[in-house]
Image (spheres, each protein chain N blue to C red):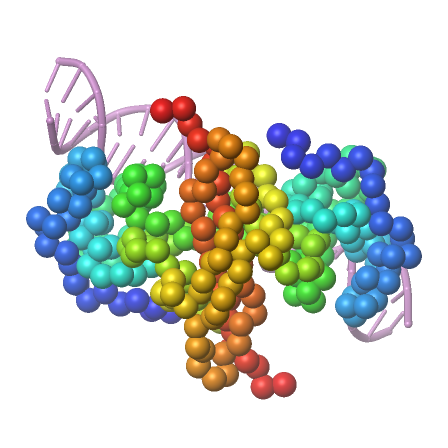
Length: 146
Length: 146
DNA sequence: TTGCGTGCAAACGCTTTGCATATTA
DNA sequence: TAATATGCAAAGCGTTTGCACGCAA
């Protein structure tokens, strides 16, 4: 069940603060904690996973604050929210354009470089309507021996 | 709030039964009801909406049966499950390959012909891993007057 | 009668909310 | 000190589950 074991890797405090500042988010202790964990590397974490990893590292951040913070991060574009399973949201620390490979068996999520999937065009939209995101999810399964 | 008002349109009973048979699903009354409603035309409905429309038409199908049935339909490939919002699942009666346009303001979901969005390639997959679906969701919003 | 399908209500899991307390500017 | 953020527990919401009943082969 342990998909991503973060062994305490963290972004430095200064880098985390700078990241928050750049997005106009006041850098409170808890936000710094969450940001430095999430941005330690490119990864996809759920609120639950973040909560678990923080408490494992003796950082006590409440459930409500984790949810509030992730919502705030998503709204300001600090993280990308990924909707793949109806049961939980993932937060993606990779801000570069990319797609996702989802392993339905394990629930694992992997990035796919945009170069590997070319989107040739988009439908014509009514004026006043703008694209806020294009999500490409390739769902894969381990072939079962029939 | 009324996104799709189904004014009693239905697939004929025979057509619904044939559809179920073709997918190896034993045609019970409730399954026929749900199929004839869902396949009346290409649409995206949630369990909740189906439940509401059925009860409006005096067809009493329980919540559990609606959920069980939609799950069964999705597993057998009779409908396509669409995950766009983390809060609810949509069931798409359009079985032809296509993509989705999602209006974040209204929650409305619209089909996009595959010709308008070309996916040029897919990443190389490990052997034993097969693609079970490729979902492309274009999220759009009404531009706010800044 | 044996097994599958249905219905009800209770349980579940993730997320949100209300409100008191603490922290920040 | 005024505004914002945090923490806790309770509530919310879509979905699933347990189990008794019903129906068809």
